[in-house]
Each structure stands twice: as structure tokens, then as C-alpha cells.
Length: 292
Image 1 (cartoon, one colour):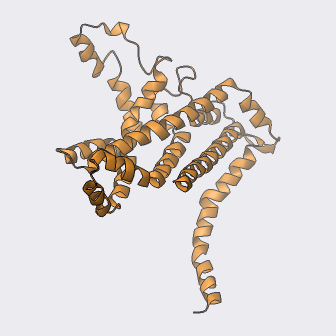
Image 2 (cartoon, rainbow, N blue to C red):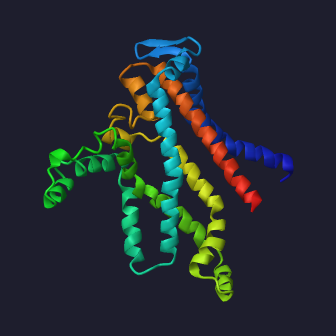
Image 3 (cartoon, rainbow, N blue to C red):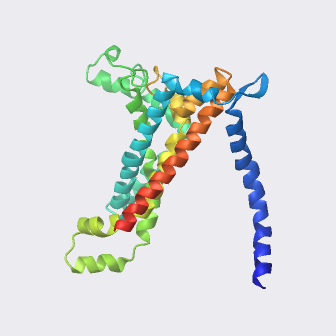
């Protein structure tokens, strides 16, 4: 088969994928961008009005707060969440006593739907019933004196953050797979030279994890930009705006205000933030790799 015929066959085999991409991704994205510039509700067809929706959302303090909360969660997810996953992978790689039980227990939260997790934590952390009440009773503490962690603006943000800390098991799996690909001869040579296990991790394992760490940070960041269900099931963005993020703001604009044009403008901002984060993270880890 000559080169020309080969290119023709490659093009023919990629046509179904391109059509599927155009229908499932490209067309909806184009529609979102267009309708974000329109006066659009459930009872009226899209009518072009320029950037009015963007002026409206950027002049809204709640929207600015939602961006701030979203970006803060991105930072926490990219550092704490990925860091916990990496630390757990380093421990499990050594296969300590009881490591299989620990690995199974650590992975269980990842198979539970996040919406169910939100409901579970809402019930568990309620001071009037659930697991908190018997603990308070044991120490003789009146539950009326204990704040509802999800209902108090001082604690709500960090309480919601704590509900998904154990979802780093997915990152642990990725790190373990990458660690398993490292040749054992490298560690054996380091041991002969007198390197301790933790020195081997510091100077061998961790530098080799930079590439996959960038992947985990990217996945974690994008997930936080679109995080909705667990926040909605626990606080619905409240109290006030303490846990309000972009998806919750978008949901309220579309359902409570019946303003699809405004909601799609928020969606455009989400897309731009997501793409920007991916580019920045990719550039950051590429620079580290080149400097090594």
C-alpha cells in the first residue's frame, strides 16, 4: 500500500470519530458560546444582545466569590489531594503489614457516588443525631452548643473540603502504576551504594513521578472546576456564599432565575478557566522536566 492510499484509509477510519466529536462536544460548545451572548430563557428563543450577560455576572459579587472558592478548591485539590494520594502510594508500594486491608479500605470511598457521600456526611456530622451525638454525650457536651458544621459559614467551606479527601485513591492507583514501571535494578543499585529506602524515594521515585504528578494535578484541577454534586447535597452553596462555586452559581442562574443566557456565560467562564489551568499546569511541569 502506497503512502497516498494509506492516508486515505486513515482519513476514512477517523471520519466516525470526527463526526461523533462534532455532535457530542463541538456543537454543544459552540451553542454555549453563542447563547452566552443572547437573551435566552425557557420561554423565549435566543436573541443576540452582545456581552450583556458577561457584564451582569462580573458585576455580581456572588459570581466573584464563586470564582474565588473554585480556584481555592483547585489549589487544595492539586496540592493536598494529590499529595495524600502520592504519600499513600509510597506507603503501599512497600507492602507493609496489613497493606492489602488498608488499600481496600482506602479505595472503598472511590466506588461510592459523591452524591451519596454528601448525604452520608450531612447525617453523620449533624450534632442532633448521627455519630456526632453519642460522642458529644460521652464527653458530656451539650449538642446545642456545637455548631452545625455544614450550616455555619465559618466552618462550611473546610467541612465540605474534608468530605472528599479520601477520594485521592484514584490518584494513588495512578502513582502505584507508575511506580511499578520503575526498574527494580535501580533500587538495588541504590541499596548497594548505601541508600536508605526513604533516600531512594526522595532521589529516585519522586523525580520519576513528575510526569504522572502533572497528570494527577490536571485531573484534580479540572474536577474541581466542575464539582457540583457533593456541594449541592451538603450545603447548596451556602450558608451565604461560603461554599458557592461556579457550577452551583450556574445551576442557580439556570433553574432559579430561568436565565439560560446568563448560565451559559458562566459556562464559558468555566471552560476558559479549565483550559487555562490545563495550559498552565502543562507548562509548569514541562519546565521542571527540562530543568532536571
